[in-house]
Amino acid sequence: MAIPPNHIPFAPHDPGVPSHEAARRFYETMRTRRTVRMFADTPVPAETIEWVIRAAGTAPSGANKQPWRFVAVSDPETKHQIRVAAEAEEREFYSRRAPESWLADLAPLGTDEHKDFLDTAPWLIVVFKLMHTDDGEQVYYPNESVGIATGLLLAAAHHAGLATLTHTPSPMGFLSKVLARPEHERPFLLVPMGYPAPDCVVPDIRRKELHEIMARV
Ligand code: IYR
Image 1 (cartoon, rainbow, N blue to C red):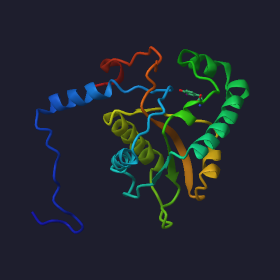
Image 2 (cartoon, helix red, strand yellow):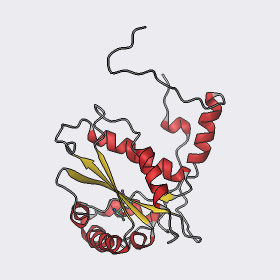
Image 3 (cartoon, rainbow, N blue to C red):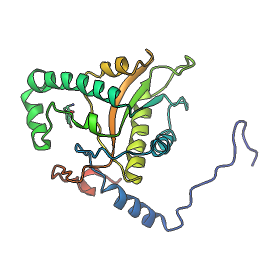
Image 4 (tube, rainbow, N blue to C red):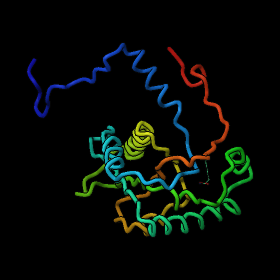
């Protein structure tokens, strides 16, 4: 068959075991991922973070515009500035903005306006969505694209033995300011990354069973 313009042969991934076995093993790895709010201050090499971000950058995106930027923060001063600003927003959220029903839904998670982890975690990965590319080109499905990339980021970190937290201080505009990001980058998610604290505990939650999340036609 003639190769169409701009195309190259595809090299599929071979898991080396039957697909159900490969899929099961990946599930067994991923099922141990938990959102963690208690981090150790143990350093994580920048090289690890770079590989994790490379993995995130393999995500599909609308028209392959790759509308994301991952700002990796390890500077203690900057982390602290982020903590101070995030806690100010969160204080508003917990004391005024959040309706009672939302606070009731959060109660089992034990979250509050104290965000020690923003100082403690060795890395804060701030995920930005690009409203247009750095060259001014249009982007497509940026929310879907950056959402998928962030999912890969979490999976790659977990695969490397690192814990993550998907943190959504709201509104997140302060991140653009503190990190001096250009106008076309919009804060999407704040992901503290590092090793869990030795005494780390997590909420006792359950994941939905397959029949609850899957329908078959
Ligand atoms: N952003 C706040 C509140 C919060 C909201 C949801 I939805 C959560 O699942 C967890 C927390 C905070 O980070 O505390």
